[in-house]
Length: 227
Image: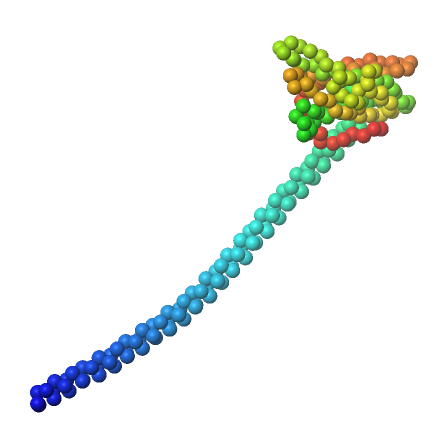
C-alpha cells in the first residue's frame, strides 16, 4: 500500500508539474504572438510610409517629365514660328528690294501637300510682281502635270485634273503677290514627275513665263495670302 501511495504521489506531482509547464509554454507562445503582432503592425506602417513616399516621388517625376515635354514642344513651336517669320521677311524683301535684273512678273514657288485621299493633292502657286508694282498686273495661269503612264511620257492638263482650272486657266490680278491654289486628282496609273506652270499676263507689257517644278509633296509651313 505504501508503494502504491508513493507511486500515486509521484504521478500526481508529475501531472501537476506538466500542467504548469504547459501553462507556462502557452503563456510564452501568447507573448510571442503578441510581440509578432506588434512587430507586424510596425512593419505594415513602415511599408505604407514607404509606398506613400514612392508614390510621391513617382508623381513628382511624372510632373517633371510632363513639364520638360511641354517646354520642349513650346520651344519647337517658337522655332517654327521664327522660321515662318524669317521666311516671310525674305519673301517680302525679294518683292520690294529685288536683285538688279530680277523685276516684273515672276512665278515664285509651287507648294504641294497630300490629303486623306492618296490620289488627291493640294497645290499652291505663288505669283509675284517684283519692284514694278505701282499698278496691278493681270492674266491667266495654266498648269500641266508631267509624268509617266504605261512606260510612256505624258502631260496632263490641270483642266482635266482640277475643278478650279477652267479652259483658259485660272485668272490672276494683283500688285504685289497672289496665291493660285486648288486641288488635283491624279489618275491611279499615272506617275507624276513635274508640274509645268505657264503664266500669261495681259496689257501693254504682256509677258509669258514658263517654269517647271519637281513633284515634291511637302507640308505647307505657312500661307501667303493675296496682296
